[in-house]
Length: 208
Length: 201
Image (cartoon, rainbow over all chains, first blue to last red; front, side):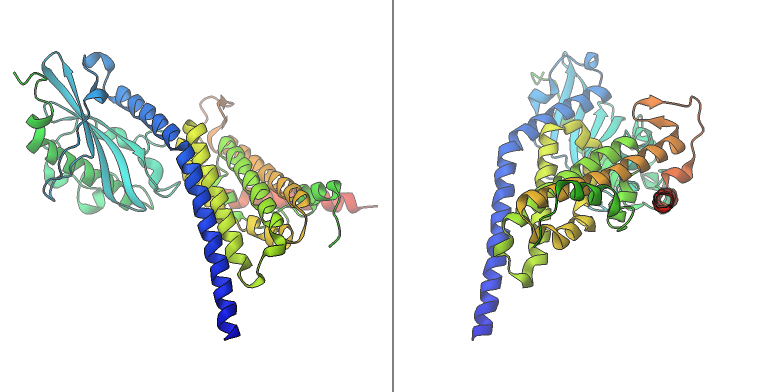
């Protein structure tokens, strides 16, 4: 009985400490969350401006954010999309995509697709891949991600939208195949989604 | 429990018991992040911060610790401290966090932090525990900075934003993990040489 009571005491002690730690972290998180999301929004804008020259469109894509409905499994619905237009002419669609299947969780991507279905470019917004191996998908660490610019579902053909290990056209990294595979698959599926949903998201602003 | 003087804490943390060169602790994060001066400096300072905060916290509660669960409690305190620093960096040093954020969680795996808490902080007053964390962290940072600067210079010919050798071809070995081990070995050899030279009559 005393043994059980001692175990209970130790367990309660540890539980209380965990609760205390969690509350402290939640408090800090609540305190800085708005600041972090503000910084993330600024970083998002910088990434968009880098891929989509501000002179190419005259609307504010960020002000026209929409959240697409989830679609079929073969396509990957972006979590948010931002249309870019010049007058009434659709220019491009900026898509925020959560790529599944990374080495350590989802990879948050920015995919910019021109109205004709070709890619303006892809950037990694955030990820938790292995430092020194998988992080070569970042634009600052290697030029790998620039490979997507100008590509479309027709170039290369859909069957070659894969890393070399899987018989496709895209390089993997030494020691890291899973990370680039997740990115390539997600970009391809985003293009598939775009082909089916293009008109719903970059139709002219007044519907004319 | 004897009190330890400020000088002695400094001498131990920075030199006599340098965690990276003498205790050979915390090598995983040390070798993983020491590929550039900026990485080494930032991760060194973050590690120092974690050591000071977690050591002081443990010291403050040292009389209430239950011996059988002290290790999980230490790990909890370290993890909470590291996560807090991660969040604060994200809020206030966003650009730096974009490049180094991946490495911050690695600080939890630094056994030198757990080692100092178990060996020192949990049985000394807050002030001494904090100072021990500070000097141990600075000693660790010094090695990180030396390794980072050396490897970056050899591997890429740059130092921070300075390009020291134009048209340098790069030296891959220095950037790779084996290069990190070799560089650390050389640093230890230099330290040992200095120690034996100082001992000579």
